[in-house]
Amino acid sequence: MANCKREITYRCLDDCEMSGCPTHKGTLNFQSVSNSYHFTMNSRELYFEEGELQAMIDLLKLLERADCVKL
Image 1: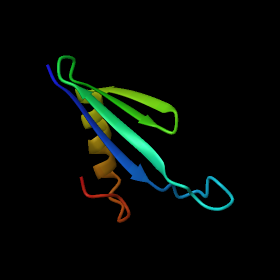
Image 2: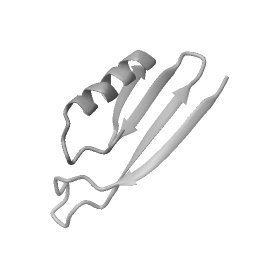
Image 3: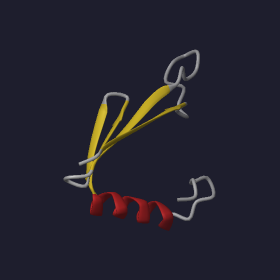
Image 4: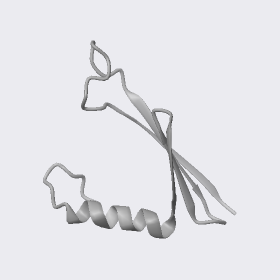
């Protein structure tokens, strides 16, 4: 059984404060027993199982936008 956690600090693109974005933290937790992902960002929580997350990644690739990160 593995529980993996990764965190990233980022700036949003929509001046969330009048002085600009102070930075935010995103956290991704992976739980190997259930193959589930839990993503937390700005007090929002998203849960994905493996198939749902792969579908999201595939859809992002299909957007074919130059500003998308290469996945």
